[in-house]
Every structure is written in structure tokens, then in C-alpha cells.
Length: 162
Image (cartoon, rainbow, N blue to C red; front, side, top):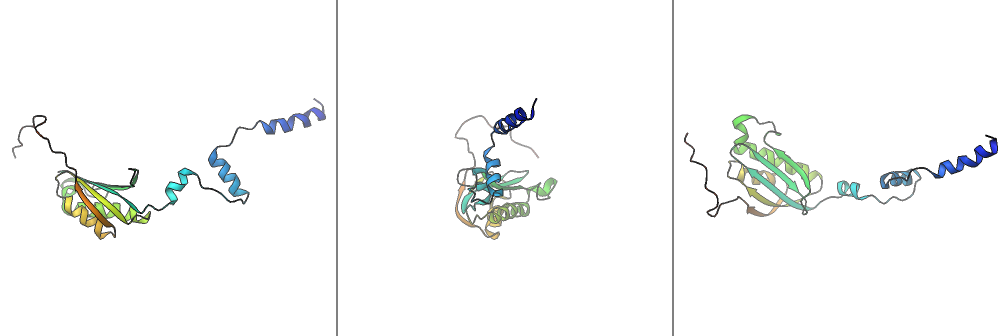
């Protein structure tokens, strides 16, 4: 090939680059020093979320707390096992308090300050988890018990003998 044909084909090769993704285009604009509109993925992380829903699931073996935004996307979560409790100590009211405080601190760090509480289950950490959310600095707007109760549905298991 002569030098003229090499020069002619080189710009064409530059035009055949694969298309940039939206994220790469944003980074390229940021490098160029232009004003950048933040894409949807990053906007969710950077934006503060003022209100949400706290789901508390308290069973005989564990207490789990997950705090979501209004649409249901999980912002923060914690459980007694994650908080460092093992065995029968996971079932205690103190573990429920610590779990709720841990999850609430994560949510407060992301800008949440008001929460609606929905409780499910009959474990020992029910009420103490609500108190833990309040002590972490969040305002509890309402408390709703969502424990499933059968209305003469399936036959229950045999009674436990201890």
C-alpha cells in the first residue's frame, strides 16, 4: 500500500469505533470540562431520600430490619446475625434494638429522616426494634402490624411440646 491509501483509510477506521455507552459519554464530557447531567444510576445513589418504609420481621429465631424508599427499593438492612449475635442471643429484645439502630444509621447517612414502620412476626424484638429506630434519630410516622393471621385457612401444625 502506498502512503496515500494508508492516510485515506486511517480516518475511516477512526469513524468505525463502537458507539459509547451513556456512562462513557458522561465521563468523556466530564473530562472535557463540560457541564454534566448525572445519569439515572448515579442519581439514585447521590440523591437524599427523605422518607421511607421500615420492614421489621421478628421471628422466634431472628430479627431482620430492612429500610426501603417509598417505591420499595432497599436503602439499608440489618439482621441479628449481621450485628454479631449468634445462637439464642439473636432472639433477644436487645438484639432487636441493635439491629434496628444499625439499619437506621445507614438510612440516616443517606438522608432519610422519616419512616413508616411495618412489623411482621411475633418474636421478642418487635417493640424494641421500633424503639431502636426512634433512638437512631428517625421520626416514626406510623406503625402497622402486617403479621399474617389465618382466617380458618390451612390446618395448623401439631402443637409443640417442650
